[in-house]
Structures are given as structure tokens and as C-alpha cells.
Image (cartoon, rainbow, N blue to C red; front, side, top):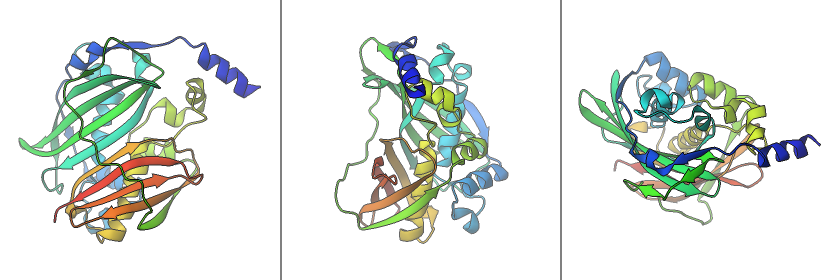
Amino acid sequence: MNKLIATLKFLFRKRLSISSEFVYTKIKDFKYSVAENNIAQYNNVVKSTLDKRNSKYIHPVYFAKVSWRIILDFNDYLEAPINPAILDTIVHQSEQIIIHKSLENLKVLSVRSKIIETKSHRKGTKFAIKVDYFSDEILVATEYSSGILFGVKLKGKDITVEEMPWPKKLEQNPIWTETVEIEKNLSYIYAEKAEIDAPIHTNPKYAKSIGLPDIILQGTCSFAKSVDKIVAVELNNDFNKIKAVSARFTGHVLTPNTLHVRLLEKSENALYFDVTTNDGKIVIKGGAIMINA
């Protein structure tokens, strides 16, 4: 009965909408201080091995923590604010982070970002942003991130200002498979330590109200843990070899769970992978770690 009531509420909810012209809204620049305890907290929550080697080294997926600050308080950074209720619907779709410079001992990042796409999606509206990170005016990393405004209707035609780079898709037998255990309360821990949170991750009532079965694990958490596993097996925990990481989030991870990280292809310059849950559902496709040869 409760499931039926939740379904009816979802079907008859007030539908949110957003204009495709949102893509032209400017995002304000800001500076982000990289504290050592902040790095350690992030490394610890994703069980990263890199903090044992160098506690001052930033995990590549850490940049998603910085860009989430924009998303979390989007209206504070947008020149033209949008309906705040829309922001609660964001579900991460894809992430690609390109490393241009060593990520050791970075203290202050200058963050410059822009929206590059608004597009209709079967589950709502897709939007994408590009974020450039500078240290002392030197470009150290570029992040491409896309999300789905779950259940939000796009008004107007699709607009793409800049194409997102997509990793290649592979569907083949894995070279090897390693497991990563996901504990029941990890969504809450990651929200606190990584400061990446939204109602779909920590508010069961809200998650169910928009059609999700329950709260879901943050995609960047699954991504970071998968990258760690592959770097441990293939690169002897040497994160300095990473030139870029990317993934496309194709399914929801409920907790508790067991992730199966599957290496699909390897070469001197790249490692390609996907990730499945304990029921065999693929939740990350197009996973890639590009390597400095």
C-alpha cells in the first residue's frame, strides 16, 4: 500500500520545468582553499591508498567535491537564479577529470566554470558544466560533469555550447574482477566527509517521492572507490601516473551493496573498466583511467 501511495504521489506531483536558455547563464568564479585535513578526510572515506604514500596529494575525483560546492549553492553562483526546488532533483550522470599538472601540495584553486549543455532526457533534463581549476594561474585540471534534473521538463530546444568528451564504450569479458564492499550508511558518511550531498542520498522520504526506490550512493563515491581499486592492482598505488579519469553513471547503487570492478581492456596508455552491483546491474560504463606513459 505504501508503495502504491508513493507511486501515485510521484505520478501526480507538480511538474518542475527549466528553460533550455539556462545554458547561457554565467557562473561566478571563486577561490577554493585546499586544506590538508580536507584531503585526508576525502581519501579516508573512499578508502584511498594514496594518503599512505603522500597525504598532500589530491585524489583525482576530489575535484568533484569542489564543483559540488557550485551545485550545492547553485543560485549563489548563478547570475540569474533558478527555482531552488529544481536543485534537489539533481542526479549525477557522468564525470571526466583531466589532469594537466601534478596534484601535490596545491593550496588554493581558482575555479572558473560554465554551463555547456541543456538537453531533454527521458528522465528529465540533462545539463553539463565544464570547470577549469587553476593554481597560481596555471591550469592544473579540467572537469566535465553532467547531471539529470530528475523529473524536470526542458522548455525549448536542446542547446550544446561545447561537446563533452565521452570515453569509449566496451562490452566484453573482463580481464579481472575485484570487489568493493559498500556499507549501509556510506551515503551519509560520504555526504559528511566529502561534502557531496543531496536529498536523494540522505533523505529516504524525498528519494521515494521522486520515484527512486530509496536513497542512492553518490556516483562519485562509487567512481573514486573503483579508481582506487584499479590503481592498486595495475599501477602499484601510484596516482602520479594518472592523466585523466572518466565514467558514466548508468544505474543507482543502493546500500548495502557489493560493487564488482571489472577491468575490460588495458594498454600502456589506458585502463578501461565498468562496475556492476551485487545483482549484476551495470552502474558505471565507459570507465577509463588514462596513464602518463
